[in-house]
Image (cartoon, rainbow, N blue to C red; front, side):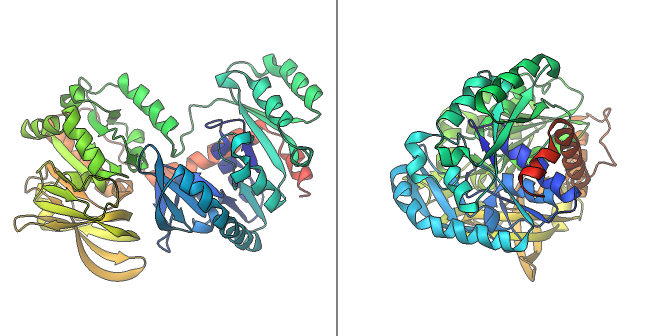
Length: 507
């Protein structure tokens, strides 16, 4: 089990690395995190919803994601509450105090999910959440040291040296553990080291002499490996990079993603970051609207509140003006709903707002319902939509939404869904304007399909006249992701004592 001294110290990444290392060494391995709070989620082949980090770890382990790997998922819907998803299905919206009371009922769910996995795999790689020793939260803990006790796990404590205070973080966290908890510890990992590792040799001696535990690895910071991330810290880093982005004067196609307050599933756009002819920028104000060739409204965990935000900040007016000036506007899931004439929430599913007028860029209206649609789908572009520059290619993705959208008489459907959760179906999804300059869909992951993404980018190149920087024609996003797992395993294996960890586990 990888425990942390705080959030964003690298637990998820190291868990993914060891999933691949163990797989490469011949073990059947699966990830597990009892409770996750995530902006980004995924739909499993069975139609269950789980956190993106455990999906990444499952991919690294070479196994299909399953909700048992993340039995409890929290998706923030406001500043004080979250939608609670148990074994892939939403059970309601809870305030923090309500959820603390509800947690007692989840202990058996967590135990059953873990035991099912443990019965199917040789090794389970567990991940904690935030700091492992938040004393005021320990009474309600189901994800850190209490989970370690439930699984009888050997534990590694991870600290981030890049943020400073590594000695206080590692040694202080250990001091706050009970003797029984310390007995589970097999050592430390010092993560994100910048500079010469030899300069930290005295630091290793200090940690080991004061704790009696070994430092099992000092992992250098890396920029050459990219993994899908799921939390607000990762998104904030992307925003900071975007503030220095090249959009607006670049010869590359520039795509702006609106950073909504309740943004979800922004991993939909990771594929663009590896395209040689594309600049991807996250932004949150109207001043940058005209810097881009296309603007994407992403998914949202609270569509009405985020739509209201667009209107209050002037972004709504900016998007309409951007489209009229010849730009391209795309909406995915919640962003798609915002493109219509009206979004209604008569059942109070998302917030206290009963209805918010949409941007009016597509002829449809949306209503929120208490039951959530979660499914994996396969679809193809409809022939009529190909007139807007799309090719008749198949795409794969997944749906996660509470809303149902009703198109008007003049609406032009974009996709035909032919398979849903493995069953043959015939549904229309999404809408497009006749010229393809504004379109939207409920299908997450649509851009991961290489031919569709490339077709979309070629259209943007043609509209903007930015064709001097070629697209990476041979680039496969799926193959690129697999290579990242290989590079990650190589990097972490090189800088951690795998043999010593295996010995501690009796392997």
